[in-house]
Length: 411
Image 1 (cartoon, rainbow, N blue to C red):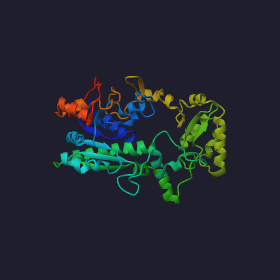
Image 2: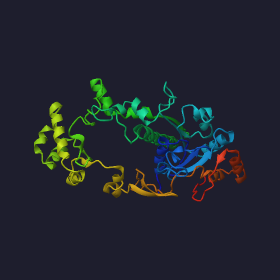
Image 3: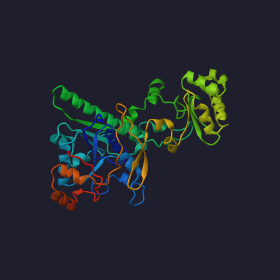
Image 4: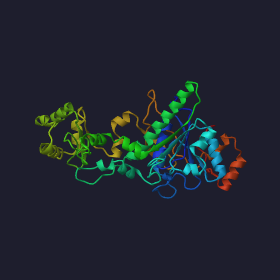
């Protein structure tokens, strides 16, 4: 099977979550991804929160199938090695603080000088310029600044955190991957027109992208001068027909009967046809309806409600735990659950989210050891064993002593 990005090489200088997820998406579209790690801690998602000697499942899920080359970019030789890799690459992804790549002598202009067609993506919290460019931050901060966090949670309560990292993943990883694919497409179109295949510099701010996608509250600001209070918008609990209700066993059901036809069917299944006429109620009437619906769902455990709505097409579903999601028949039918074998365990791994002509990328390798592919990748550049060993002794490079599963190919 040939995936759309087959034959392209991505150098990933990022770590932790947003950058590695971005390059994981590119890999799942066929690209070869080489992690460029330092010679000290490397990508610390490898060991974050784990006992000594144990690699985190998070690292494997984020970096499955990638290669790892470990270079000290603070040395001249380390920087020159990176530039040699850039000459033969298509994309570079980095997530340092703004200005770090320039200080290292690895700015976009420097990369472009050795490879005019290179696409460089700088992924950061607040962007490469502006008064907050140099500030540190995490997903919660970017959601807070963009107005997203204010809208999360129940009416009257404090803002609530979600374990889906909205800014990191939707604002960062997906936005960066989309921009990279667009830049690759632009480069290809230039070639087809007979023009020089010019590269592109991408400045991706997680805060910018999160703000740009926060469309419903932003529309409310335009209409009324302010967003609805937390938990009171149409899609956050403001309407009884689009809300979450507790069951008798302290589980929950998601009622998303937003359209009238779905609401009518929901009322029929609940044997409450008199509620159908209350579809558009507001104010105290809506609160009374919410209370009545809540009392009804509290009368049975979740599994009974699941069975009742299992064959009904009205947008009512059980709120599942992550472990239950792994066994859901729809996800299993879509082959979204794969096994990923590591040295110490077998992981349940989400499959690539993209399919092309009905086929998906193969998952067959866990996340790499730090520097696992340094030696074979440098050999593919024409560098001698003696020179690699010398650089290893000088700390310019780090190559793992375990290379049994190395699958690096020529650059």
